[in-house]
Amino acid sequence: MSNPVSSLALRHQLILEAIGEGVYGIDAEGKATFVNAAAERILGWKAEDIKGQVFHDIHRHSHEDGRPYPIIDCPIFHALKDAVVHTASDEVFWHSDGRAVPVEYTSTPIIEEGEIRGAVVVFRDMTERRRHEEEQQRAFDEISALKEMLEQERDYLLEEVRLAKPQSGIIGQSQALQRTFSQIEAVANTPVAVLIQGESGVGKEAIARLIHEQSSRSQKPLIKVNCASIPEELFESEFFGHVKGAFTGAHSDRTGRLQLADGGTLFLDEIGEIPLSQQGKLLRALQEQEFERVGDATTRKVNVRVVSATNRDLMTEVRNGRFRQDLYYRLSVFPIDVPPLRERTEDIGALVHFFIEQVCEELGREKPRVTQHQIRTLQQHSWPGNVRELKNIIERAVILSGNNRLNLDTAFGQPARADNGQEMTTSAENFMTDEEMRLFQQRNLHKVLQQANWKISGPGGAAELMGAKPSTLTYRMQQLGIRKPAKENQG
Image (cartoon, rainbow, N blue to C red):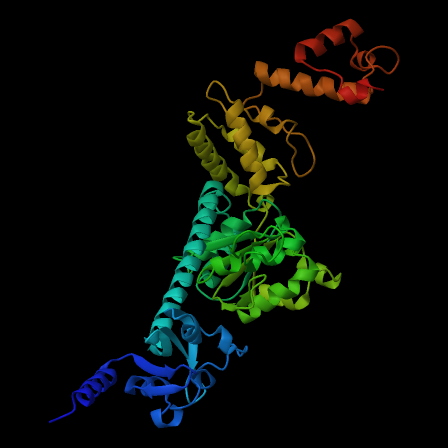
């Protein structure tokens, strides 16, 4: 007959060998008494090699980062002192080959006749779970970063839509503008850097948008950076972004413009305004197509096409030591010169009608009548502010217009001047309307008063210069709403 005790022990042994968790038994001194097959498989130690050895010396000699792990701090051995079940889920056991194996375990004391005889340690290999958790965390971080970037891109694009001036600088069929269009068509669908050069107000941003729209990157964003508006101390944050806490005021992570433009086009407006101290950092990012956020050691790769614009002569800036030569050549692979409005006067008529329609739609007004004489008058103006100045004039003229007629006289604020400096009249016929006469009288009387240093009567006074009585001149000033400037009243 078989021994019932031996049979029970055998069944217990078979159960221990069959379960998937690792199981150790230790005596009251912490020495290993039995090890199941799962424990051998997970940690690589053979039962015959560790039985009788202090369990902590084999598997608990240090933390994962190498810091000492005193036996008195070990939850497994606490069970031998306080007879309480102890658990842990963020520790490691050491494999026989030196690897750290993340585990969770339970240490249960064995109590016989009121005395602690040892403990049973049941543990589970957490390597796969940790790997899945890390993958999930990486995925979550990527999603969070993408969400942040999309939110910033959304806010940026909404602002762009609000401020956009649809094609206002590229309307016309002049020969000068056609040459620019030919350059755009030639370069748009290439990856090379473009430098747009031209005076202020000629529509360089509109040209950049057209290049982007005609390129293979048109489905990706066009990200604009106004280099003149970025303080030097915020340059890196604006271009490359920053992580939370990188500097005072960095309350959250920020995606830089370079990353927002990934896959699309980065438009660097007023490129000549970038401080010399920051130009090398921009050059490196553009050359390598990679960058690091402020406060972050992670290098990020991007794929951007760069279009720059300036109203400066960058070669002169290079010669004067204010602009890096290597950055200039990086940006000006394909230069495009945008003609000023005075060189494409035949486009003024089309621009005027476009602006009138645009402004009237915004203001909810009927379009005023524009005469050919007014167009010819506008074509004679020198337009130092180019298309931007023309648009401002037309906006004011529409606002001031009455009787369905465009009021250009008041819109100019002062007489329009041709390239030769001569004043121009803007009436459509050879006579003036009452309003035009009033404006003419205002300007004329104002000039006389300025020449007389606002002296009305007496020798050299405005009344003497005009051949009028001082009382008459004073009355005219009241009727025309002319007053001596306050600063001159203080003299």
